[in-house]
Length: 319
Image (cartoon, rainbow, N blue to C red; front, side):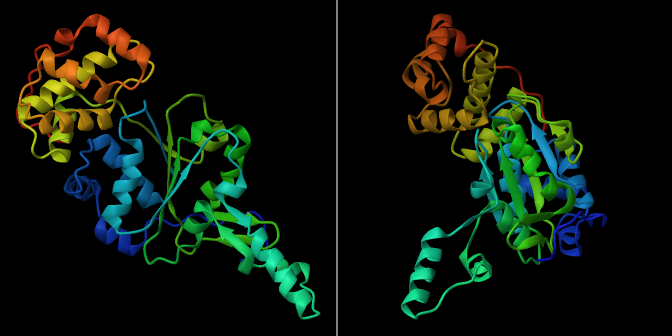
């Protein structure tokens, strides 16, 4: 820890250990593929550049397109810890960075009093009484590989919290007023996700690389589903993916995403279904739609509409 102040030193790129594991975009795609996350070249390039340039990566897209899973997969591929901060309206430093352990401080005061002693303010607000939250944990991670820090759904937080993250995003450091500035010896790999429920501040986006993740094609969704549900049939995976694409064309409150596709095919596979048909849809509406208004809207179209002929899958496509 050191005294607070602006750090003008350039951020370092990926360390040798990261470069050995992920030397290029193709290696990243292969590593993600081996972990059953199928990436396109655009996403793989964005992640690789974030690693190589030591820049935060902001991933935007609709719910259910796999933004959060990018950070989880990257942490597994690198064999490094993932520190996840789920953002929400009203989140503050106590949940994100640090908090003082007040019960332990009170105990320390009582123990000191029992010994006819007193704790100084410096002793009371020392690292011994600090509760480390995800941002601080990621910055203090000792390596040898940097930790992955996921700021999930940053758009749910308010503008004040966005401003609070600027020091971390720009300088790989955080400041605790009582202790000073903590600088990362291995700057964390920071991934932010946003469902774009509101526009983020320009000052935040300027500090990040940016990538928009589109909802994948039915063929790609089917490929993802088959990775996650190995016992499912290829026709069922594609038919279900096509059905979810139809659902997403409706004005739904909660459009289904990849997670719902996986859950739906898992349930259908357990029921012994190899091809999607209207009776199977009627049995399993609740696996894919989780809102009553959505159920009524889709139900008005009918199970037969949803179980219509799948889109043709071209040969050889791969994420």
